[in-house]
Length: 113
Length: 117
Image 1 (cartoon, rainbow over the protein chains, first blue to last red):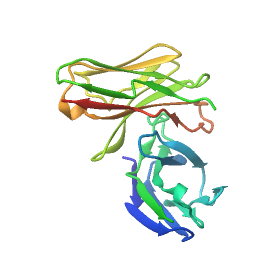
Image 2 (cartoon, rainbow over the protein chains, first blue to last red; image 1 turned 120 degrees about the horizontal axis):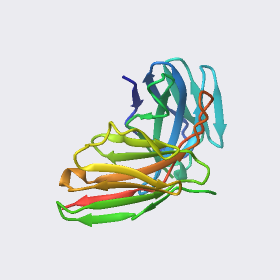
Image 3 (spheres, chains in turn yellow, red; image 1 turned 180 degrees about the vertical axis):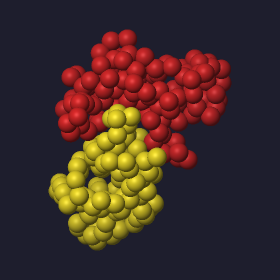
């Protein structure tokens, strides 16, 4: 069974204080690892897809990296508008998995001004 | 930007009533997903369709939930009869699946917040 564990559950940062969120996964043949951002009352918003170990993607203050067991979302010099819940999801490559995503519980990030 | 549209955004009804949630996927996407999000369980996949055909509904309580795609622009999720434990936010997502190649990401609507009294 595919499993995704995110840590920490919640993170409070001061504006400008860089940090990282962790996503550990167990999956039978990773087809893709996805990061989403979710704001209160909204649906998850796609951020990145990573396909293989060693791959990195960047967008503004966010950088996602991938190893064979985990992914990190690095936030550099965060701003209050980066406050949100960040969700990690994996897609397995098995024939029976289809295109389903298995989500972690999320990390709730709060950036104080 | 193209978006997944869900209606209604909020629904409050009494236990035993039928609830229908609707989703308009992004034009050109061939796969539609229904998820449920609660504080306790997080995001759970209920069912999904490819080219309007149901592929997997193992996440749904079969006795009360049903999902259909009457046409390429509309997906529905029905609960009959509804129960208080069905209270949650229901999300629809759509994506383009390209066979054995790299799949495009799923794009989510803003959900239907359902409260069953």
